Amino acid sequence: MTHGIGIILAIIGAIFLLIKGFHQGDPLNITAYFIYAFTLFFLYLSSTLFHSLYFTRAKGVFQIFDHSSIFLMIAGTYTPYCLIALHSAFGYSILAFIWVLAIGGILYKIFNVGRFKYFETLLYVLMGWAIIIAMKPLYVAIGAKGIALLVAGGVAFTVGACLYLMKNLKYIHVIWHIFVMIGTALMYFSVYLYVN
Image (cartoon, rainbow, N blue to C red):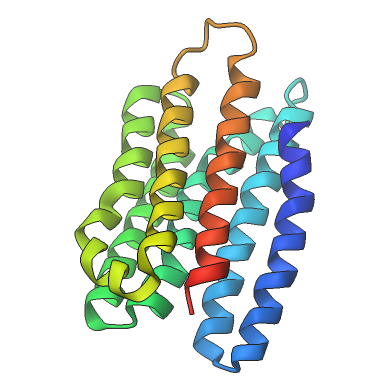
C-alpha cells in the first residue's frame, strides 16, 4: 500500500524532472533525469507487485525484482549527481563503478535472494554512502542545501535499512517503507532543486 503511493509520486516527480531537463535543453541532463526517474518508478512498482503477489507462485520472481530494484535505484540516484553536478572524469568514474556494483548486485540477487540479509543490507548502505568520496566537488556544484537534502535522505535510508533488519517488531515493514519514501523525497528535491 505505502509503495503504491510511491508509484504515483514517482510518476509525478518524473514529469517535473523531465520538464526541467527539456527546459535546460541538454540531452545529457534529460538522459540523467530519465534514468533517475525510471529507477525510482521501478523501485516502487517492483515493491508494490511483490507485496501484492506475495501469496502467489510468482512471489519468488517478484522478490528478485523487488530486491534488485534497490540496486538500480541507488545507481539511478547517483546518475544525475555524477553526470550533471560533477560532470567530470571523476564523476563518470564513480558512476561507472556504482553501476558495475549494481549490475553485480542484481546478478547476485538472482541466485541468492533473501539468503544473506545482513550482508545485502550492508552492501546497500555502503553503496549509498560511497558518494562521500565526492563530497567536496559535489558541495561546490549543488551547495549546502543540496548536500543537506542528500545527506538527510541518506540518513533516512540508513535508519530504514536498520529497521528492515528488525523483522520481529510489529508494523516494522510499514515503518521501513515510510523511511524509504522519506529518503526518496529528500534526495528527489536535492536533485530537482539543486542539480543543474
